[in-house]
Amino acid sequence: MLDLTSEHEVVTPPWRDRVCLGLKGKINEVARAIAGDTDARDMTFTLIKESARSICAEVEIDGQSAFLKLFDGEGEADQLAYMREKTCLLSFRGSGLVPRILAFSNPGRFVITEWVSKGQVQDRLDRLSAEDTGAKLGRWLARYDAVSPAESACGNWYSYLNRFGAEIDLQAVETAQDLLLEIPLCGRSLARNDAALGNFMLTHKGDIIACDFEAATMRPRGWDYLQLYRALILRFADRAADAVEAFADGYAAEHKGALIADELNVVARILFCAEAVAGRKDREALAWL
Ligand SMILES: Nc1ncnc2c1ncn2[C@@H]1O[C@H](COP(=O)(O)OP(=O)(O)O)[C@@H](O)[C@H]1O
Ligand SMILES: [Mg+2]
Image 1 (cartoon, helix red, strand yellow):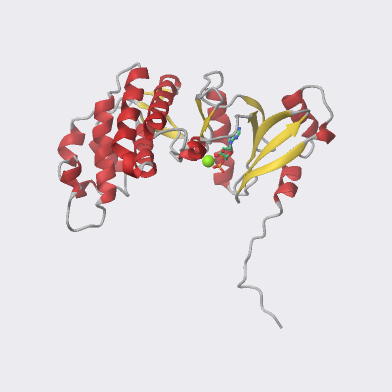
Image 2: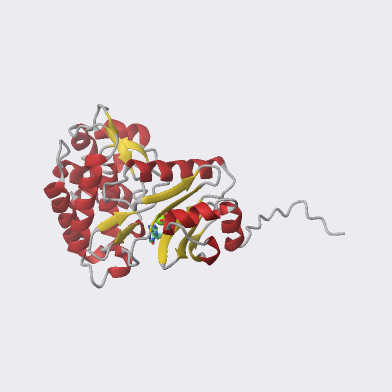
């Protein structure tokens, strides 16, 4: 006899079945949200991405496209991810910084947004230089900062990272403490908290629109700056200096407020150094600063 008690394999149903189940009972409303008064039977789906947590698909009906993100994972984390995604899309509605939300369903746990033309920043490296990518992201982030929900917080970056950055070894960078103690926090704001460059899309007009807010959380203002700075260095390894300079300039040119790009650059460099030298005995971090 075969004993299967120790074999616990979770089988995820095919994505089309997941979409049908997720939209069950709401298919006509979905069709209407995308194309007005129309027949939902003509709706087609094209898979973009699937994971245990969610399914992303292009929905087409009557020649109109929309983006569907269905959070059908079973866990509490999946429910929270849906809530964050929806709340951010609603918070930034009308800002031009995120896709316009067309519909959402709390029981169904899905959002539907306007379709942003294909061609992410990631796909257009040939056309977008390190400078252009940096500058566009910097401008986008400054505009995002200006409308992001915020609350006050005091302290400095050293005490914050010491307390909450458990995985960051600040001791690895000799000057980190002195420098970070001098750089104050400028309150907390709703950070995207996910710097994957694949989450930034380019419209046909060349503007950046960001998707994927499921990791959004309140963080010291500037948190996304630090994450994008790092992402740019990793992406443009051989043009890193140009990419981050353009990023800082783009951000400074668009930013209105107390946050100073120069200070964030110092924090970002320290974090990058701490990561680069993590676990190493020969501390080479000073050469970076
Ligand atoms: N409104 C949209 N229009 C067109 N494509 C989109 C839209 N929103 C997201 N995408 C594409 O779908 C991909 C997956 O969406 P995302 O929200 O990032 O899901 P995940 O959490 O699985 O990364 C994105 O990287 C982007 O290429
Ligand atoms: Mg994503």
